[in-house]
Image 1 (cartoon, helix red, strand yellow):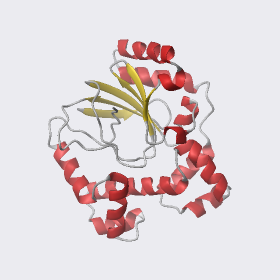
Image 2: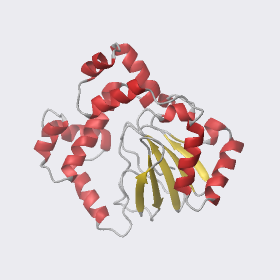
Image 3: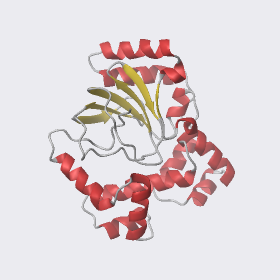
Image 4: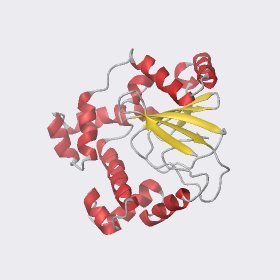
Length: 248
């Protein structure tokens, strides 16, 4: 079972998950522009920003995670996002094995591992650079469907500057981030019952065929198949939502 709630860290989300046996219907994690710090029964892992669907592989029975707002995790982790793109790695590879083990044990001993993750991140964030309001403006504009060139002009950056800063903050350039956020908008509309052709136009796609191509490229499925898998998960005793970034 999967649950999520707002974190105390600005813009972040806490989630917990009890793993179920893998089945053919298990849904992959879809790109969302975010990065996660994950506790997997004593082990701490980092899920980098994805450019394609990631098939979950269970390594523990219980998980807790904190999902950072797009662009916020690199300052906390101390590594540019593009170095973690499409990767799941142990936190020890970034912070050292001894420190990661100590933190993992502390979170394991807590009655609520997700809340303990939130507290850890807030303590560490106090000594890290604050999220860049310019990059948050970039995310907000792209999430609203603004064009990349228009967004660059609005925040006062040239195309190359925006691309370079996006690689460090989001893991990929602004055009890829815009595609990922557009896909999330479109699928949310489809799940809300909006016809695919209308959802495509409202999300910013040229037409329904464009939406289908983008969904295949980024999610490895079609909008209809994705909606059907969500409905199947909702009717299951152990739903496997696409937001939980379990890792091999």
